Image 1 (cartoon, rainbow over the protein chains, first blue to last red):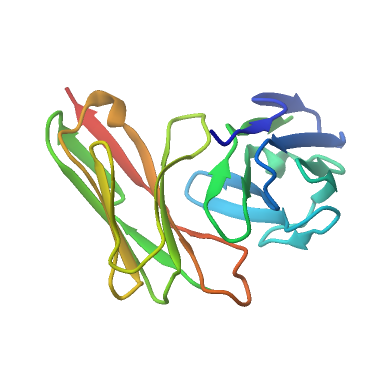
Image 2: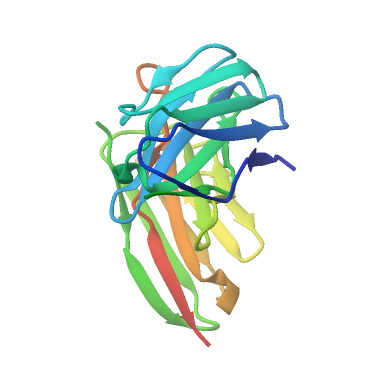
Length: 111
Length: 114
């Protein structure tokens, strides 16, 4: 079975804090993605990576950065968390353009 | 950009009834995916479709890749309470600009009345 794990299920941070969300996949997938999901807005792509050290902006990259130093790990970084970044964050991975698998999600609250 | 219209937005059905939902697009896709999401969880892949006209089953679930490559449907037969959740469709565009990104429907919220 494909497994995508995320470092935390729930996270509470304060405004201005630096936040790291970690995602790990165990299937040697090339492509990895970070989304946020908000009621009424659906899934929105923040960043994706099609290979190690490669990254591309998605639809809403502002306020976020990413890091992919190893193939299995893709990190999302909020340099200075703000309340409008309170959301459900979902990581996903896939081989090339094939089927995409999601992690369990991290519910982030920024106070 | 591409958009997916998923309908219905929500459904209330009696346990045991069959369910049907669909997604349509203004442009073609090479792959259609169907996911289910429970509250507070990540989407779980139910069915993947790779060829126009393909009909695939997974237990009580059946999905089809439309022959025009612009639509797909998902059927659930004999619904049970654990079918409750939000069902998403997603399409993978042909190779080219934006082909790394899936396009997602807004979801169908399914409620099952025991």
